[in-house]
Image (tube, rainbow, N blue to C red):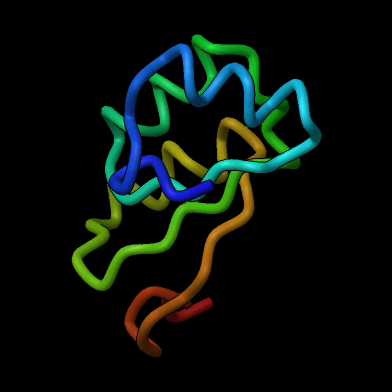
Amino acid sequence: MAMKANPLAATLLLAKDLGFGCEVASPCELEHALRLGFRPDTIVMDSPAKTMRDLRQALKEGVRVNADNLDELGDG
């Protein structure tokens, strides 16, 4: 479930209980998803405006990240 479409905790908890994952687009949304108990492996960060800090945080937490451009992959 895309958090930006429905960030209400009650709705997200219901979705989680039904086996849904969560798509987040910002560090705040990522924090909200983790606080609600979504497992990191069920969270995907997907945003065309991710910063390197956002990427580092998401990877540190163990969430999946959709790369939107080659710059997000780093230089090795």
